[in-house]
Figure 1 (tube, rainbow, N blue to C red):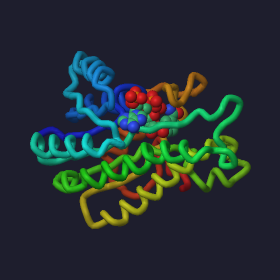
Figure 2 (cartoon, protein in one colour):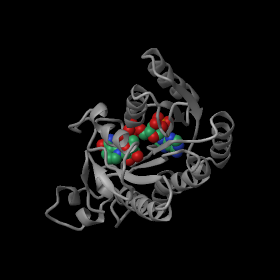
Figure 3 (tube, rainbow, N blue to C red):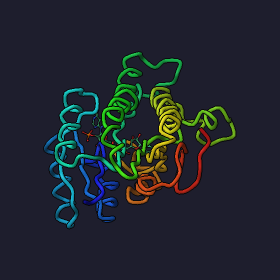
Figure 4 (spheres, rainbow, N blue to C red):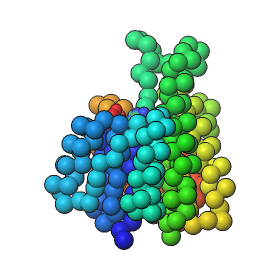
Length: 241
Ligand SMILES: NC(=O)c1ccc[n+]([C@@H]2O[C@H](COP(=O)([O-])OP(=O)(O)OC[C@H]3O[C@@H](n4cnc5c(N)ncnc54)[C@H](OP(=O)(O)O)[C@@H]3O)[C@@H](O)[C@H]2O)c1
């Protein structure tokens, strides 16, 4: 049987490109999207390129959809080899400024953490029994360099000037999940790592980003067969937590 991967938020941007590159490696990719129409369109695009991909429904904060997806993967494949936790959001902030720690509203924090952290942790925990059935399970948590507390607290770092608090804190929390889950699974065949894709031209990254999605997806794809665990990586280089 092919390796089986699940990529969340796979209908566009980095998720779509990650699915494409994994598909080209011969992996069967379950492309999760919260919107059936957008998800099906993306799947058709990659199927026309000859890749073995399929649509699966997933709004990461919807418990019933998570449960249905876990059941589907269990009955259809009986295992999961790669989980790419890619779906994520960033609030743009009020007109004229970002949502800094000084002004960010509680609902923005909650919504951001629901998707970028709580939804992701819940999905991962529920899929773990299936990932444990893989000979070499891999979990890739798509984080961001903006979640590095080391760089955020270093005024000489160019990243320290970019401070949307809800997003950065949610990615720092996600990085903590990576560290803790990697430790919990250290005696298993499962490797867990955080990816920073780079600053990439997508709806989230914006038009001024220097990288295109195919370049940005490379880190997640490489971590899908990593031989190390508990690291925060961009393009083969480790990033400080
Ligand atoms: N682009 C960058 O420069 C950059 C840099 C560092 C990290 N990242 C991270 O890379 C990941 C992908 O981002 P991107 O740049 O590709 O952004 P994007 O083009 O905006 O794509 C985000 C994807 O996540 C999905 N999504 C959002 N909320 C969801 C939810 N509640 N349930 C299920 N799916 C949901 C979106 O679905 P819809 O289409 O339905 O909205 C979309 O498929 C994110 O985790 C982001 O934080 C990006």
